[in-house]
Length: 136
Ligand code: THU
Image (cartoon, rainbow, N blue to C red; front, side, top):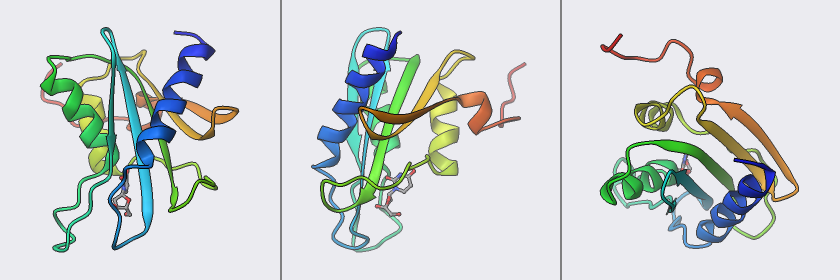
């Protein structure tokens, strides 16, 4: 993976963020997962019950898994209040970190982006050290 892959993945996350369903928080998130075989996207989908809201990252990971994928090379995340301007680096919540970790290895990269020209790159080990596992 090189910087062109990262740019492409960030762009996909920016695009899918536009579909976020956020009538309650107004905070739109897009996530794009790159596996060994393709790109899978998700946005956050809120619910009137609040607790049933699902994050963009988990929607993207579950979409990849439903397609038969089991290994995440990289995930790009873009989040900000509604509108095109992205002012934050949106880091994945704890629940999403654990779900991403399930399909990660030591090379898996997490990209938090404001634009294709402005993003930060992390490893899953940085974002979720000592994560839960019962496998050695
Ligand atoms: N959200 C995500 O999509 N990903 C995260 O990692 C944290 C939060 C969503 C859930 C909710 O729709 C909105 O952001 C505000 O919390």
